[in-house]
Length: 133
Image 1 (cartoon, helix red, strand yellow):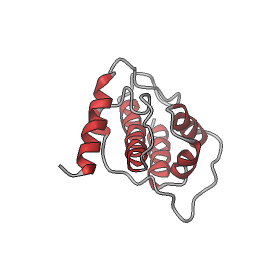
Image 2 (cartoon, helix red, strand yellow):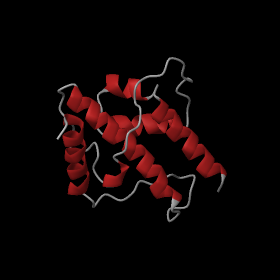
Image 3 (cartoon, one colour):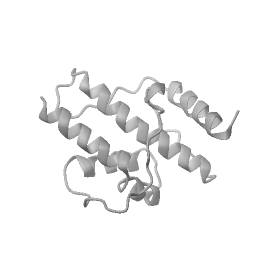
């Protein structure tokens, strides 16, 4: 089995270990809104990609990184920094960055993630879901 498949399998196991954590809610949507799960799955895809990057770099993956994430959120997203990125403005971009850091992602990797397509796609997705409310 190729290394990436092994890593993704390990990440899926990590995600399945603790399903007791509730889906974090976004205050812009009602707590029982199904879009909450959609937003959380997008965040989790970033967490899984960060875990894969840490594995590739031979670094320790914090146990809290994918805790509570659904295994199907382990999809390929790009957390590589883009050349041109918007500034990390207040509101959801800073909130998402804080969530990434609180999951145990090292600050240098979190800074790169905040410049990635996956990060800004998640910000745009959140904005469109909340605006549709």
